[in-house]
Length: 78
Image 1 (cartoon, rainbow, N blue to C red):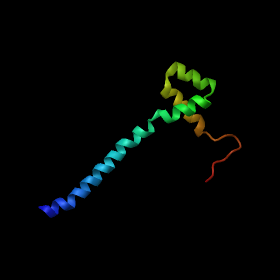
Image 2: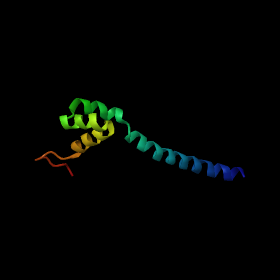
Image 3: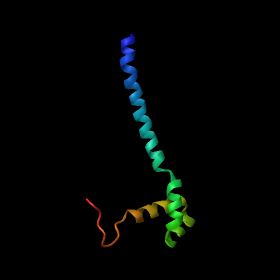
């Protein structure tokens, strides 16, 4: 019985750690504290208007969408 427990305990613990990582990942991505400072420093007027009318999540999504777009004449490194 002890051998069975000694073999299964690390596997169960590893499974729990992997499950907790999957739970934690969306929570870290939803952390708006990091994005809020950058948003407030460099937001455009239309993004500020979105913030006032629709709230922070919609404004941050619009801001992040703008940051993901490639500027004209610039290409991403492959």
